[in-house]
Image (cartoon, rainbow, N blue to C red; front, side, top):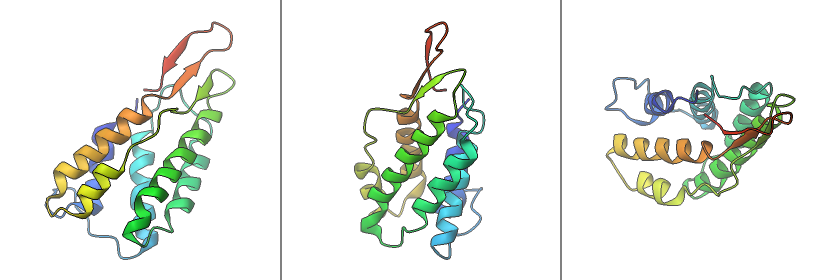
Length: 153
């Protein structure tokens, strides 16, 4: 199952100096990409239904997010990376399921704007985790034989 606690913990490890999980701030855009991709990978590690393309999805996400060096680009790049990640993840649910990535838009600007203007990190990370988790859970998977449709979990 998708694990929002793991996502929160991994994001806190590089974003919240007051967290017991904090390992240090990223030194460059590659560290940022490593932190984010590691957080997303741990979050979907046991996704239901499973996906055979999860590693490809993570690598694509990481390549897309490595370019985040300017705060004003953070939200659109992260949004694009998450959309690409979900689309690739959905493909790997076949042949057992026909995966459909979340079709509602992920709304990050209120959270990211708050994050850039805040010195209190934990509530922003919690809100970001909840936003990402709720969005991912709108992904669907349909069994082509039975027709049963389940949400990603």
